[in-house]
Amino acid sequence: MHGKRVATALFVFGLSSLVTGQMSPDLQKKVGDAVRQHRTDLAADYICDAAKTDASLQGTCTSNRQQVEVQLQKFEQKYNDGIKAVQEARFDDAKTAFRTIYFGDYHDRAQDMLNKIPALEQQAKNNQQATENAQHQDADDAKHMADGLNAFENGDFSIAKASFRNVLANRKSEAQGWINKINQYEQAMNEAQQAESQKNYDLARQKYSVASSIKSNGPGNPGGRISTLDALLRQTQQANNRQNTPPRPVEPTKPRVDVAKSLRDAKRLNASGDTRAARKAYLEVLQAEPGNPEALVGMEELNKKAGSSEVDAMLAEGIRAFYGGAYSDAEESLKFYLISKGSKVGLAKFYRGAVKLTRFYLDPTPDNTLYDDAVQEFKDAKRVSGFIPPDAKYVSPKILKVYEQAAL
Image 1 (cartoon, rainbow, N blue to C red):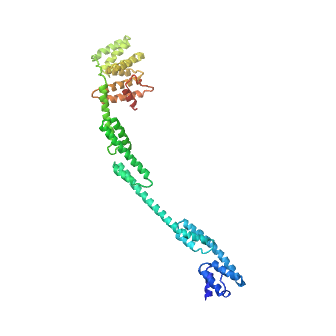
Image 2: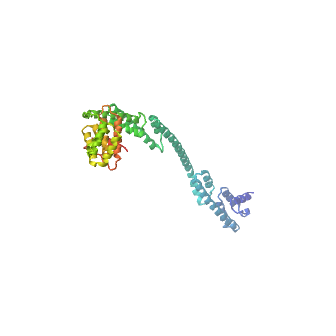
Image 3: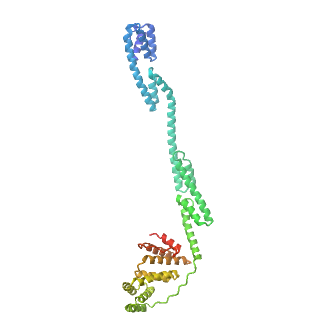
């Protein structure tokens, strides 16, 4: 019975069936022990050693050697399968593959891998835990960022900073950038409020502008404070202008115009060829009645007959009146110059704007309509192709500044 069990065991593990009667009991025991230990290579060695003195075992030896070579090839494949399983973190499959490599060159390699697998398993667990922790942290950071941005938009900067400080991973630098913005805002607001309390409105406006560039409707409403300061600065500037502006020259009272008589005189003078005097008579009528149709038609006829020198004289008179402080005369001369279709429209428009702006600055209770009309005159002047305003040495810098800021 023992011989049959050995023969069956050898067949199961890939060795040729052998004739137990050809083996000594001692050899049968050694072969059986080797097979039970999965060392079929040793079993083949025992048989082949016996075949050296017993020629009847030579065929069995050869067959068993061939079967051992087949197993060695299978062990190589199992080793490769085990390495692949390790790379894919299938450690149980890897251990199964390595544990069934019982002998040969790959046995020691398999044992070495089995010794390394516990550390590899722990490292994989650590990596998985780190990945899960990072995913959780990213989710937490996303929530803190959303909370911080929402608080910032609602103007609750203390909650915003607290939320941003809880961001710890990949978006930490982004969150710190928002904290820096809030700190910059708060510092600018503190400096602006201090400057405003000291009536240093220019510095206060500058600091409010810094805060407004971060959030115009943030705590303290820097955008609204800028509008308030602009009004204060404008009032202060107007008060300074009134203090620094010399008294306005008193303009002489103009005599009442007899429209019917002036029209008759204008026709008579025109008929006699005195176009300059006729133009003056028509202008007196237009001064009293700007829309008088008969005077307008008469001016149109004179414009066709007269040379440009007469028309240009009105522009010169208007400019001289402006510099002499006779602002009403200046406006009328410039208006009549434009009615007469003078060629220097840009210059006439500019000085009409200068007259109105000067009147605005001189008025103790300034009329904003004058300011708006002046800006419109400046815009009209800018629209004239090729027009260049007078040099700063001839016109107040304040007037030129308004002209430059008049947007088309």
